Length: 432
Image (cartoon, rainbow, N blue to C red; front, side, top):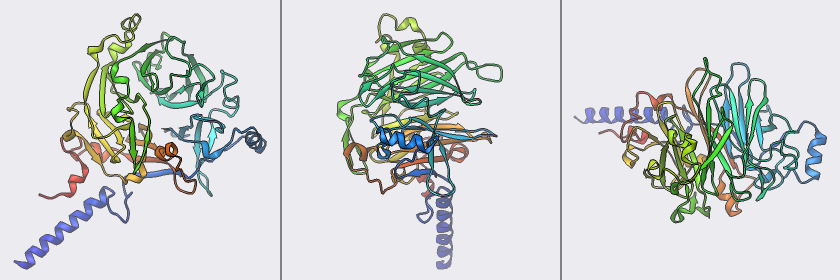
């Protein structure tokens, strides 16, 4: 009997270790087969076309490396030229450019290169035909990238906010739309997050029938842009406002105040899902309501009954992203957890799935995307920037502060009960 019990225990322990290794939970190898740290920085390193450009930027105060904070990430897969984009908004001076690609080097850390050119960024707001402050980006099905440019450096509205559309096949600017002043409040509005929804994807379509939804985080509204009509309008709702009860955020033991409104957004092509940063609630509104310009012409707060409060989390979260089967991902701030929720289930704790990741890798995930790689498999990409240390003045340039992370989603989406209640992968380590 004793030997049988020992044998059962050994089998149990073997299974425990096997499953832990599979999900990257082995403390000696916590990233195995799971989260990959693609790039990381202590301080961002900028590349320049020439050494003269670098020295000029330093002399003019346009290169202060410690001032740069990466906010968004976008991988673009191609059989011939896969690339990784990041944004570095100009929260202050010293940022030489705010939209870049990341280049790996044989020696030293990753280096940024301006996109599409250094000249397009180099006016620092004195030429509004350039890029003033790129905040976040969105990719469509035609290998085109929308860029939201807030037009703000520091707290000064240097240029009107604008949407830029780049053809990534040719790296050319296809389209520019400057927002009219009836859609934003200069030096008060801050356009930060675009979500693109395409009605005419390839191979038959050209992505002309597209809508772009843009979050105004500081003046608490949403701007809807119709690409085919080249028109934009504004919508507002009480759910876009911050909740003062959740304006103090704690990450890894450090607290700061930030009363940001509508922040994270994602769409399943039927609804827009969103939440303010200063909130623990998730909301939704049908795209058909937002897309009907007539609804908003005479009343920015029209259709209040179309906005739904879905439920609450135990913590705030920043960016969010959605996969092809309706799983929305976000990282809560306190405690730090990567969660997923499927839009076809109630927004309740028992339907949240926690994906095991070391918390120190996820300290303030400000950018998040789900993309398909060249094999057609979906991946979750995230960028974390330890914003709590920037807000509290405790950032240490000798520590790793910024990380770009990649998580394959195949095993999480298929065969492991990921869409069922209580799909927390930690539970796979519990034997009944």
